[in-house]
Each structure stands twice: as C-alpha cells, then as structure tokens.
Image 1 (cartoon, rainbow, N blue to C red):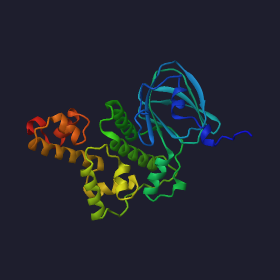
Image 2 (cartoon, one colour):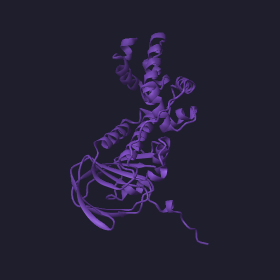
Image 3 (cartoon, helix red, strand yellow):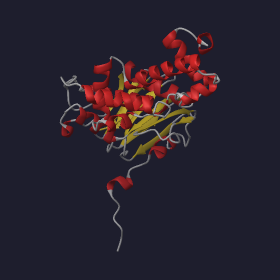
Image 4 (tube, rainbow, N blue to C red):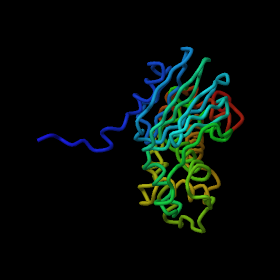
Amino acid sequence: MLKTKTVTENLPKVIELGQRFDHTTPVLSSRQRGWNGIVVEQYQHLSNSFEVEFPAPSDHWLVLPLGQPVLVTQKSDDRLHESIIQRGDTILVPAGQPKYWCRREGICCAVHMHLKPEMIRQTAEASEMDTKRTGLVDCSGKQDLQLHQIAMLLLAELESGGMMGQLYVESLTQVLAIHLLRHYSTVTQTITSENRSLNHIQLQQTIDYIHTYLNRDLSLAELASVINISPTYFASLFKQAMGISPHQYVIQQRVEQAKVMLKRTNLTIADIALQVGFSNQSHLTRHFKRFTGMTPKQIR
C-alpha cells in the first residue's frame, strides 16, 4: 500500500526556503539556538539574477531587505507584478501560500524570519480574538519601520551570542506576533488591553519564583506556567502590574542581587555575574551601569 503524505510533509522547511535563493546558506542563523517558535536568518545574495517558485511554506515567512533597492517580479492571482524592493519594505508570505520570485540585478541583503502559525494563534487567543479570523495576508513592498526595528533587535540578539537568553527572544517574538495581528491580519480591529489584572497572590507567586530561580535562563512560558496562564497574556498583565516587562524585571532583580553580593561577599565579579544569572562579567557590568549609573567595581 502506498503511504499518503500529509500536506505539512510536502511543505518546504525553513532551511529549504532560504537556500533556494541563489543556492546560498545564511551568514547568520538562529536554527542552532533553539528559539521557540521563530527562526531568524540573514542572507547575502550575490548573483545577478534568479528565478524560483516556492511551494506553500509551513511557517509565516517575512523577508526584510537591508541593502540597495532591487527590482523583483512576483506572482499574485496568476498575474506578474514588478516592483522595487528597498530597505524598510516588508514582504510577508503567509503559511500555506505559494510564492513566485524573479529578481533581476543587484546585491540583496535581507533578514528572513520564519514564524510558527501557532505563535499567531496563541497571541490571538490570549487577546480573546476570533482565531478563525486572524489569518495573515500576503504583503509585498509595504514600508514598515516598526517591523524592521523588531527584526533588528532579533538580529542583534543573534549576533551577540544570545546573552539575553530565551526570555528576551520570546518577548520580542510576542511583540512581533501582536504587530502582525494588528497590521497584517484579516482582522482590522486593533488589539486592546483587557480590563483584567494579576491578583496579589498570582503576582507574589511569580515574583517569588523569579527570585528563587534568578540564576536560570528564565522564559516567558516558564513564568506564565507558575500561575497557569498563556505567555502572551502573562507578559501583558505583568507589565500592567509592575510597570515594566518580565524581561526588564528579571534583569533589574539580577542587578539588585549582584549589588548585595558585591557589598557582602568576597566573590569575584565574574563569579557573582554567573550566580545571579548573567552570562559573564561584561554582561553584568553593562546592565549594572544602566540601572545604577555605576560599575560593579565602583560599588565594591
């Protein structure tokens, strides 16, 4: 008996999409970092031209040009459209939609982001949106500087070696998902904050957990699981209650703990950095100075 493949088995994987561009590999990729729900890659395409038709991708696929303007031909509704794609533009290929590309001439540097559809669905559910009406729409050439800023923050995190950890990446991914729902979904309404809040017990449980496991690479999912709510909903309610994001609160508490240890122990600054959850001494110093205006050496 012949085995019938499912639709998802036929969809191209993340690495296949990028490598079909000029048969190149990315100069930077988060695939080995284990980021949750998102892959970020940077490509530098050097050949004069290419033509390729992709099957429908399994993930939402964003291409954000970083280089000089290039002439690109794309197919939509069986018709070809030519356009100049430049820095600041957005190309969005929703999951499940095929795409035809033809680029003429020019070096094309771009950031590619592949977002799991469940990230959009979870964000929509947390905002109590109708998930049946939150599909993303095909987009090409729309200027979106805010989206580029999110991409640049993710790219900077990728280049830095991931010192900020999973919590920072997940926070940016949530911001990305909300932005896409606001501006690229079939729902035109703006996502608004719900009139709800964490109660005192939930907030205290979360804070206690952060202090207990301050040295760990905490994630939004882990913190949200403490009080059994979704990561997106948790991030919004935590910021509403504390005035800062979970990521910023964790960094702030690590700095405060380091300050205490600098005054009360003889441990080296490098050892203190590791014990409070920073990846190294320079990581501690950078955030310590940002929050206190002084370096750890000046405190000691």
